Length: 596
Image 1 (cartoon, rainbow, N blue to C red):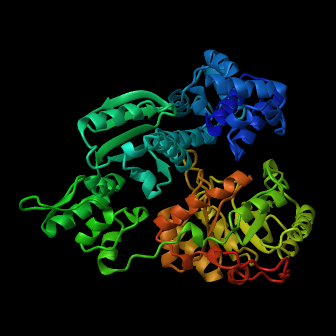
Image 2 (tube, one colour; image 1 turned 60 degrees about the horizontal axis):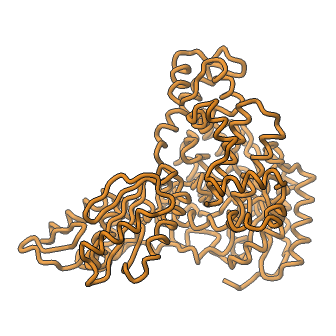
Image 3 (cartoon, rainbow, N blue to C red; image 1 turned 135 degrees about the horizontal axis):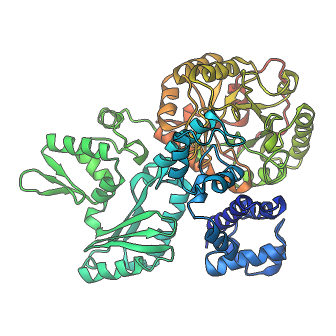
């Protein structure tokens, strides 16, 4: 059982306990255990085999260890099941609405027996919530907006969840060894879309083994996958099933000679495929999921690989992330496709959090984990004081954190530790810390965490004021979206990009799977206007640092090249490329690594 699933069950137990009115210490213990397990680099299943290792985890006592073992043993937890006899399972959906928390959900249940998203939406539309304590007309509007977001997101999954599911299925299929030739994921996951609806998996059989009996044997093996909840369909060369998470998976079993054509077809996008088929027809070919063939006589000319199909259509190879019918066909025909940034180009991470604010690891632990990834530098950017829920730092604590980072640097001679901050942009656009303190930092990252419902004009003015502040160097997660939970802020992106270009402010491509902000179209707009980008993880634990790959995926979807991204530069060149701060003190805290 994956860490993510164990954490989900514990987190839901905490939420149900809070709705049920349990004492804070009781439900918080489940929350803390969920956070810990979600962030563990090793499988909880392995740790639980050794009682001493399990009890050695911070915050895990004998009772919680017993609960964890029950979840691993049964796939569920008795207290959670008991609470779901008292409340409908759909009550957990209400907690996904941005405007509601457990206490509000409990009130809605007590007053109206409202336990579904639609029931709450009906109450809001009827104006029945505004008289409740803590609610109002504005609350009803916010709830209806959150319901709309929830309904749009229904049946979709974050990219890291979909990727983990795909990897588990592929590992199961590949246990067949030489009975198969290849197994790959296609679809929107391969294109790096922010959220995924379902999974497309392609399996090819070795020549000579692509007979009906072998196809059926492979299908039988696939349908023994441990995470399968129910079989949806089974045909001659396709099986469809639903996972316990609710995600649908379609697996197609095909001949090696058709692998490229099938991979191209099932990777999509649909719009890209339409344009390719049109080009093929104009050149006297027909393109299907089986092959590229001549219109006359249907003579096969390509199909084993994607590259040979593109070659026959007189196109440079188009990377999956670009296949969105947004000019890539024309660029490939003219030899003008970008040389997309790669994960190996990244030399450092410019947003992460430590135990100084709401992170789970120390400065040294984050540095050690980043060093293992081969980074030359990291910026440690804890929250500023406005974010009280995240234990944000005031001026005094920022200066102390700078001192600790400089002290920690002495223990690392092959990675540069940059003293940074994620400073809040206040409602009027001012920054949350004194300029004298900001001047002493190596990297100043600015972001919005409050007053997210300002109208378009007010939010635009707020962001422009922050960009004009001479201490702003990087604007983090600029649109504020939380995928599947919260829509982006309303503001004028054109004005923001122009201001960022004029003042030399870089925009962040946030790699955290819940955010992936900026989205691909905005990244491309930034590139076309000469606005520089940084790709950062916003890591709150060492386990989040590998999320960098998702930010790189988004950057590739935005047509970004290495030269468009500042943290592909060595440390000294990066610092020189960032907007210079008035009165800044440049402190060489360590020699720059040449590791990468």
